[in-house]
Length: 247
Image (cartoon, rainbow, N blue to C red; front, side):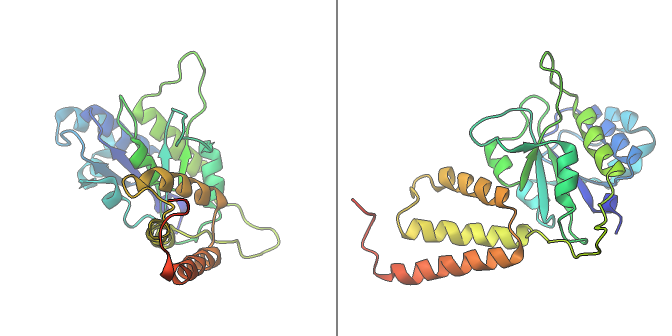
């Protein structure tokens, strides 16, 4: 499948119907068609139709979801777009670097480009659901982009950035997708809770860091299997666990 056919655009909490229409136009300019909306404003608003121009078919076909997790359920890879840096917002890529990373993914896999609210972007919990983070470098004096501008620039990178061909004809290393990573994270959380490593009142705090560590590691399927085997061995060895060290 052509790389553009494997890209999904996800808008979270969009507040302006006009912005949704302009995103449809930007996507169609770059040959993309799969638009998903999470808890959007009114989609059948005249402004959405007006700004979509000749991309009204994308607007009409857009699917609406009640949560980001639901919208990403069939996307093996995902990118959270963010302009802010912080504790859980690091290792931020450029759009071009995301295209390069996606070249290491299975040829049938799907990538979601996730864009947040116009005024506040994505929450930390929403970022944690995504494999990578990315931003568009802009001038320090004024870095804010309109939502449709940001979507257009990301889509353009995929429009021009066809997957590189290995001149040696070697099979590319395929990265593990969310279908493998999410069960790993679930098992990791259960094991870490069992051995007292995580705070049961707030396990998400440390698990966000774990997600960032293993996202940076770019695990393949064999490595995920090895880690799950390690966790299973920890579970077996901790059968007689009596409580956290020093408790």
